Amino acid sequence: MLLDLLKLQGAQVYNDLDKGKFPQFSVPSRSVSNIVYDKKLRQYILGNAASLRSSRNMSQLRSFTQLMWLAFFANRLVHEKKSSTLRDVYYSSQAFEVEFEDQPESDNIIVDLEAVLARPREDFHIFPEERSSIFGDLTIEYTVPGYEGKRTNLSNHPDGYLIGPSLSSAELVDTSAELVIAIEKGGLFTRFIEEKVDKKFKAIIVDTAGQAPRATRYLLKRLHEQMKLPVVILTDGDVYGEHIAMVIKSGSANAAHLRELTVPDAKWMGVWASDIDKFKLPTIPMTESDIKRIYDLQKDPRYQEGIWKTELEIFLKIKRKAELEAFSKYGLTNITDKYLPQKLELSKSL
Image 1 (cartoon, rainbow, N blue to C red):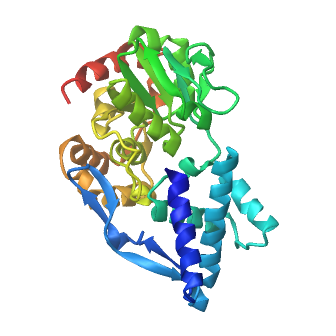
Image 2: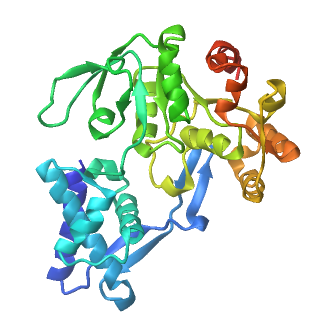
Image 3: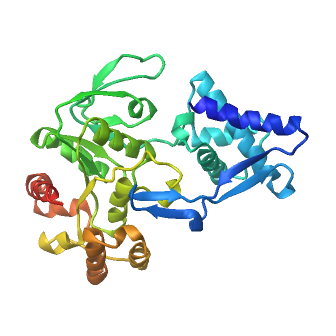
């Protein structure tokens, strides 16, 4: 249990003090050199390198104190069954006269604690501001205090349901869905609800709101593993859309210390670079930043084969990109009436 892990860290500090030693933390290194791609797990993981955060070292004393306080604060949140946002943590530290220069410094210490405990921040009740949503025939049962046992169906609200702490931790009870469609854009998420994509394709629809938040990636994994639903991903036709799909599939280097955020069998069904010409989509030119990103991803071992490699090469060749909304050139329902059925059929063979 998380509380046991926190107590273990606290006990080690007390033991060091009792023996007249300077307390210290062993923090797994998150440097680029210690992040490796595990082909068996199909995701990035941390290697064995670690560094000591010691109270003896004056240059480390500040970060040691910050990490110590955060472990205390996380323990308090879990004990009291309270939650906090990343922003709350930054301001709460001031009440204890623990200084962070800014929120990024606070956020970085939170990731350090994740690495020390090998548990995501959501487990110790610290969450980002949520922005992702879900819709479809899925009955859930809440487990959060005050709502235990209450059930709802995620097709009951026409705007979908926010994927917050209470939803991502709920029990997944029952569904008639046969797949999950994760879509990058909120506008298309709304369009899919209007066009009853959930009923036409027996689908649960998830709006990732760009790069999927970790709670959303965790929920996608649960839907795949617990409900046995295949996951397909629909993104803008650009290099960033391709990477959004890859992060859902195999994680990110920034979260290499966590294992419960990937769906290795998820399939990216488009918009591919090859779709731009095939469907005669309106395009816009790539920027220098887009092109640089392609070269960066081509060095990533995950993009060395299959559609991931092929589509990057086509993007680099055409130097054009298209948004999901580009299908509206052919009518507001073209994407759901024509493109989606074709791509879902194709995804079965990928």
